[in-house]
Length: 563
Image (cartoon, rainbow, N blue to C red; front, side, top):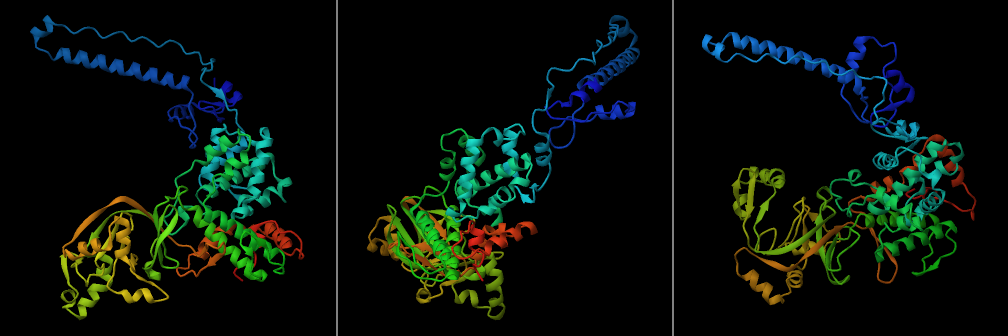
């Protein structure tokens, strides 16, 4: 049996296995048989026929011990009971039928996959092929669904169409080098068939995932960058794409289709064209005549657009037509109805060390005359030091203790929340509110809050959200007590951070980066430029192309950005 299984190179779960050698001693075989069965995690399966022998022996021993115990109990009974009710003799153990170890169970099937693919992916941690890091969680699922076989050698048409779409990644503000364009292009002839298949699969899966959810995963972002679209099973998307007439379109459809995204893509292409022309000839496009800028400036703007294209990929695909958007990069709030802005006002956002997060939430009701429950962090860092120097600080600011490290400021015109609070439900406990410090809205730099958003014209906003006239809002405030009103319809809220945005005239507004978040996003988008030595030397030679020569990748086009 052992020889037969070793010769056929089979395993109980359908994969290859190395069983015990013929010269293994009896103790080795006994230890091996006692090991549990397992899957791909590393432990190997045991032979069921040998395991059955040991199980039968154990059953015989158990039966014998039971018979002895019954006989002993009978001797301990009183004489009358023993005579009247003698114990039944124990059943005679019967030996199990002989096992034909020469027969292979019908459930054993030979491993039909590619052993090299299984070996490369059946490892913990990172998977690297030809010096290129793979997206392990995607590639393992993909090849498991295909029985650990090569995929693309039998699907040349789908492979060509999907690879062509990946090479157009720069049209989405992405770097094709992030999807193995160099390894599969200039170095493709040096790859083995398995390496080529693995890299092509990873390139297609990673590109689809970048379009669907952004190239920079949520886990790679700081905690306060919390926007993300609905999850997409890109493995299932690629499975379907391989069988449709236009596989490339099935993948391209994962990208956002909002007007802002399309406008930003066009602007990105135009600035790259300006840079490719040496900055000498402006481009005529949907924006009219583009401004004449130098190569370095055109590349800097292309970089800023690429960063903000990535942020747009973090948004849900179905943005509600009625919504409230707070852009903390410019400290501005806009209310949209039917996708058109109907109300715009200034806001005060979080300070640099107390940044307002990027998030999605909803406003369901408005609180009038709200008290302020001071967060414990503010109590510890700000109020306690002030109390140490002025024991009347709480009374002077209409505050009181409500428990250990719990301070509340009473409702009123002096409250830090003002007269109106727009309640939101999010894990950061961030919300919109009024403020008595109206002077802050006149400042050019309005990053002055602890993280919440202060609204310059809260009465007008409350009127629009409740569908009531301003007089009714004033009456709700004049009641004096704390009370709430539910909105006729919950309003989605998006707090975003955008340093480049299309204007209504088709131009692109380039803004500052007050929270300094752009460099971190760009570092991830351009990470493919941190290449092995051989790849870097190839890339440097391409960067030295003469004027008029084509430059094929975003990494090359933006090599001087930020200099």
